[in-house]
Image (cartoon, rainbow, N blue to C red; front, side, top):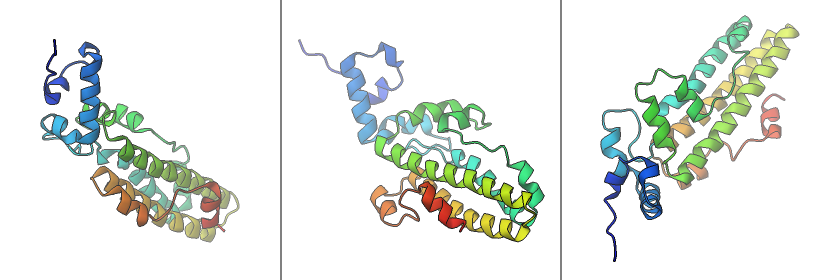
Length: 199
């Protein structure tokens, strides 16, 4: 006897542990192919993109770092305000965020299309590496009493960081991944690429 599966939108409202293997498979397939269909009602009235299931609020962690680095470029002593900056995963950010729908943001992230999530995480890796290296270089400049070096180093890095944040925003807001890859400001940064910014 064949059983008819529920509509995926209905399945998404049920706890995962109550679903059969077939229902879970249907739900995963639906989310991957068109996550907005199952999630649009749940995300209505939030700042979570209903098509990508991602939220730009995560980028505040990096925007705040760039704002402080802008200050450091002009006033090196402000480095103490960012010296302890550390990377945060998407989930970690929302766990400590004042974002109204933070629990929903974390839940939706787990169902975001894998390719888009991977693209975002690759850009986040670049952001983390560049911010940490910039802080380290600025600290060296501060210890050596070289404000001009700090200004040049931090200003160059801040410009690169803004490009990466803009790229992450496009990913979150549904930009075409192939187009963004072709026009990306970086093709995946490594330590050598970061070091070249400070030479």
